[in-house]
Amino acid sequence: MTDTANSVAMHSYLIVDDEPFMHKMITRVLSTLGAEKIASCEDGQSALDHLKGSDVDVILCDLNMPGMDGIEFLRHLTQTGYKGAVMLVSGEDPRVLDTARNLAEAHDLKVLGALSKPITPDKVKPLLDILAEERAGKRAYGPVDALDVEELRAGIDGDELEVFYQPKVAVTDKRVVGVESLVRWRHKERGLVPPVAFIPVAEEHGLIDALTDAVYAKAAAQGGKWLAQGREIKVAVNISVDSLTRLDLPEFIVATGRENGLDPAHIVLEITESRLMEDIKSPLEILTRLRLKGVSLSIDDFGTGHSSMEQLKRIPFTELKIDRAFVYGACRDTSARAILTSSVTLAKALGMTTVAEGVEDQDDWDLVAELGVDVVQGYFIAKPMPADEFDAWLAAWPAG
Ligand code: C2E
Ligand code: MG
Ligand code: MG
Image 1: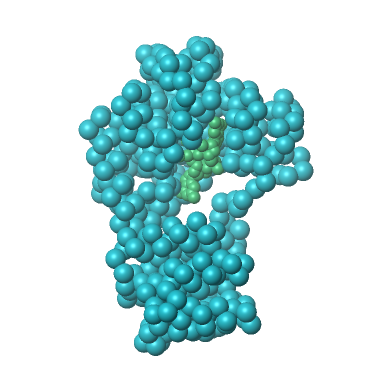
Image 2: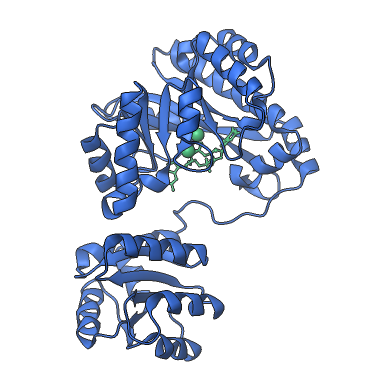
């Protein structure tokens, strides 16, 4: 049995839908995929009652039901402390379905996806695959506790930061045109700690410059090695907005690059604006000088936070990285697709390179290729890897 088939049979399912016909149809689909434990309820209240007495792993919930509707049901479900997963099923306008999904996620429910009726095995299977992967521990890390600042300071001083590299490939021929350098902390007790757990701590406590320097030094050295091997790979490093007050940043970036044999044309700085740039003068000066020196500037997570149109107008970005919220699953999400499409059009009108991050499957790839995105980064190509693993991956990658 495959991982997915195993996991499908192992889980128990609850269908919540007012139409008996839908119970039959969804039961048939689930059974085809290997499910054995399937129950159904005709409204939200009876589903809540059912949950008191039985373990359920996946709820397939209709939105439009008389009495308690699906949205109300999700709110009550959160209050029960339900830990399983949810799939939303509806005949409503896809945008209503997308909004319901966002709402469920805001309630901290684990949402596998939103499905428009009619339900077919082809639509349900990818969602059950997510659950199977999660069970097999293949998904990204879950929530992690934030770390203590002194511990982080010691970690940076003790050279415990490692840099992983994730390929960026050209959509036309899948050639590896660049890498994004992503920091991890090899912690003595906690193991490999993801950046979400310590970047905010570094930003808040004045450690971000030390962190950036450590990451950039490693990435530049690695980029220099690739170049010496004849590989034309641009190295991208993330720069926090908090570092854009440091007026000597352009000199540091260019000089450290050159010491490692990298000229500015091989360097990309990805800027995420999670918080507003308060005083725009220093960031503007620093970013404009970096551009003048020939360093590429990427606006990261475009479409979220403050990574917005206003910044595009005032800062000379060369690359637009569309946030994965608008890429992954965009072919099934009308609003995400519209935002993705218009971001690509916007970037092209401004003469910028477009990068889609979070491409996880063939459907995502096909959509971004159809829209004319230039470069793709995502699990569909490869996850971030340590440098030696990256080299082995690259050697095996058909497009080199
Ligand atoms: P980011 O710059 O937007 O980096 C992309 C993130 O998306 C990475 O997460 C990457 O592993 C993840 N990712 C890539 N492809 C996929 C995909 O197909 N599916 C999914 N679900 N995720 C994908 P990571 O490495 O955990 O980094 C998270 C964030 O931490 C980065 O987001 C960046 O904002 C920040 N970060 C990482 N390294 C540094 C650093 O050296 N300095 C600063 N200031 N921030 C950093
Ligand atoms: Mg980035
Ligand atoms: Mg990003």
